[in-house]
Amino acid sequence: MAQQVRGVIAPGRGEPVRIETITVPDPGPGEAVVQIQACGVCHTDLHYREGGINDDFPFLLGHEAAGVVESVGAGVTEVEPGDFVVLNWRAVCGQCRACRRGRPWYCFDTHNASQKMTLADGTELSPALGIGAFADKTLVAAGQCTKVDAAARPEVAGLLGCGVMAGLGAAINTGGVGRGDSVAVIGCGGVGAAAVLGARLAGAAKIIAIDLDERKLATATGLGATHTVHAKDADVVAAVQELTGGFGADVVIDAVGRPETYKQAFYARDLAGTVVLVGVPTPEMTLELPLLDVFGRGGSLKSSWYGDCLPSRDFPMLIDLHLQGRLDLDAFVSETIALDGVEAAFEKMHHGDVLRSVVVF
Ligand SMILES: NC(=O)c1ccc[n+]([C@@H]2O[C@H](COP(=O)([O-])OP(=O)(O)OC[C@H]3O[C@@H](n4cnc5c(N)ncnc54)[C@H](O)[C@@H]3O)[C@@H](O)[C@H]2O)c1
Ligand SMILES: [Zn+2]
Ligand SMILES: [Zn+2]
Image (cartoon, rainbow, N blue to C red; front, side):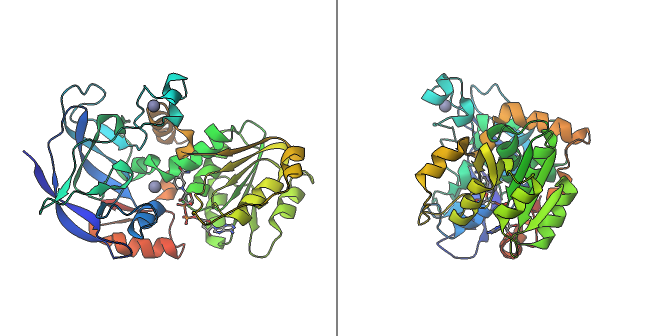
C-alpha cells in the first residue's frame, strides 16, 4: 500500500518551499522506503529551489539524512527493515567504466529509485539528488542506504550524506593529506570546516583556515585549524606563504568555488603541491591562468565530487571514529528545527549564521 506523508516541496523557480502531502509507493525491486529521523539543510537544496540545478519542478527537497529502513523490495540484500542508515547519492552501479576499473567512487551511473513519489494529484516529484528526505518517509534505491552504528545521533549521522563527507573527503581522499602536511582551506562553511577536520584526522601539521566571516574562523579553530586568515583584509596568497616558511601549503582546498578563490588556491600552494576544488562554480564562471604557471608549478589540480567517497567504506568508518570521540561531528549541527523551518533555515544559511540547520522528525 502506498503511503501518504508530509514532504517539503519546491513548487517553482524562486518560490518559497511549502509542506505538502506526498505519496510514497511501496518499494519495488531494488528499492527501500526509509523513515527519516533527521535531514540537514544544504546549499544545494536552495540551488534547487532557485532553479539553479535544473527545471524539473516540483522538487522534493532534502538529501543529508539518516533514518531507519521501514521496508525493502524484492532482491534487496544490502539492508533490511530496522537498519539505521545514512542516505547517499552515490549508489554505485558496479557496471560502468569507472566501477569496472576499480574506481567506484567515481561511478558514472549511480542508482536512484525507479518508481516516482507524487503529489496527491499524481504530479511526479523530483527528489533532490535522488533522495528527497525533508519528508517523514522517502523511497530510494537500496544502494543509497548505508548501514552505520545506531548509537550515533541521527542529526549528526545524516550530515555525512553530503556536505560534511564532501569536505572530509576533499582532504582525506582527493587531497591525499598525510602526516605532517601543511593544508590551507579557503571558505570554512559546512564543507570547508569539514575539510579542516579531515586534514586534522589525516595528521596535517599546519592547517590554515581562510574565510570572510570571523565566526567561521572561530569554528574552524575549534575543529583543528592552527592558523586563520581573514580574507577580507589580507592578501590570501601572501598570508599562506608567510605561514609556511615562504613556500605555500602542500594542499590547498577551495571550498568556495569561484575564479578568485581558485586562483588563490593555485598560487598559495607549494611547488608540486595539490589544489582541490570542492566548492561548486556556476555556469558563467571562467578561469584564466598563465599556462606556463600551470606547467612550472607542477603538482596536481583536482576536483572533488562528494569527497571521492565510497559510502559503504567511508560512512561506517567515520561514524565509528565519531563514536570513539576522534571526529567532532557534533560541531556541525548549529540548530535543530522542525519540518516547517526549512525556508527560515535557508535565510540563516544565506546570512552565514549556521554551519547546518538540521530538521528532526
Ligand atoms: N563537491 C561536492 O560534492 C560538494 C558537496 C556539497 C557542497 N558542495 C559545495 O561546496 C561549497 C561550500 O558549501 P557550504 O555548505 O560550505 O557553503 P557555506 O555557504 O556554508 O560556506 C561558504 C563559506 O565560504 C566563505 N566565503 C565566501 N566567499 C569567500 C571568499 N572569497 N574567500 C573566503 N571565504 C569565502 C563564506 O563566508 C562561507 O563561510 C558550495 O559551493 C557547495 O555547493 C560541494
Ligand atoms: Zn558505476
Ligand atoms: Zn548537500
